[in-house]
Length: 207
Image 1 (cartoon, rainbow, N blue to C red):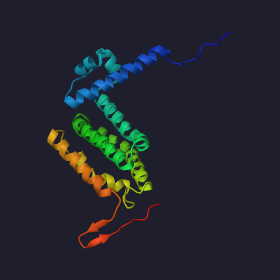
Image 2 (image 1 turned 180 degrees about the horizontal axis):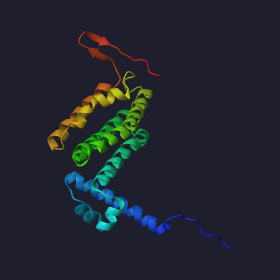
Image 3 (image 1 turned 60 degrees about the vertical axis):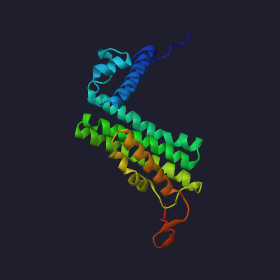
């Protein structure tokens, strides 16, 4: 006699439907919040094609939904370096990753007003080290290929792009941010570094 698989909890079909509903809600919420951080739960449920009850079963409060949207964005940021490094030259991969970082920063700035101060602080704390690690992977890949300066580390890079957390979401600011990111990539590119007093090479010891 063939044993029936034990699933524990809800049947597989119901779990799959729930996961699909959750993904649709998060997709709809991301799109809605990009249009306006004041998007209502009713609007998000309508965009996702689910009922209010389904929405609130997954996300009991609007803040819970905002947190989930941002955590999903951060996970995309954390997962991207390995794929980018495998499919693009190091400097191109770094530049594309910085675009994802910019989008994540703008997303957080846009949603920040919808969060309690404690929740915003929690997001910053839990996301900081993974973002540092992702930055480090981007840099080390380029350094191993001789395309990125050896004296730049992840903390340096994040300080260089800290303007992203202050940029607005308008087209003019987006264009300026993109231009500044081009400058950052040029700044970390390997090659002779010129100071006002002449060429110099400054290399910190790395572990």
